[in-house]
Length: 222
Ligand SMILES: N[C@@H](CCC(=O)N[C@@H](CS)C(=O)NCC(=O)O)C(=O)O
Image (cartoon, rainbow, N blue to C red):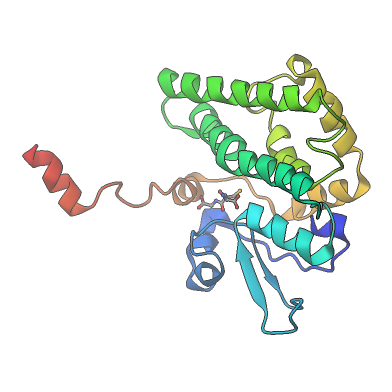
């Protein structure tokens, strides 16, 4: 998004496998302990630096700051925001869970793989039908496209073929050809490291007990 907007930026790499996302200085910016988060050192009001967490909120903030990729006309704006919310509440979380149970879970649980797999395919179908209506998700290239693209990029790992979704395939090829998107994708490539067992535990949050003592006692009493 920063590349597409032409805004200057500095990337601060995070090592999720080392728990950088749990550090107090990061939690001040992103209380949910997840990346991305940004700090705007030149906010429009000329005041103190301003931080934003949650990718959807970041996209809206940068679209409003740069006046790009989010139309001002109320109907078009609402449509872009509808699809942005669809990504935030559906595509992202469901594909995240599908990927987890398919690729990372230490045991293969067919029910979970099936449930999230079905939902993943349903969501792909919804997007494919929407993309039958136009070149981009709604109107011109927007933050809805920018938000959805990275999840569609994971289709192979999710066990999907874009041949089953011809409109997504056309849109995906169109977006992939954007030079600024390519620059964005290449960022931080050298920083990415394979996960060892400890990093996996930290990232999946299984380095801590799943239940509190009170919950464990309550379960025994039932
Ligand atoms: N809803 C959040 C999701 C962010 C998210 O899950 N980020 C992942 C990396 S892509 C993360 O920070 N994971 C660290 C962790 O789970 O500890 C958003 O869209 O910004």
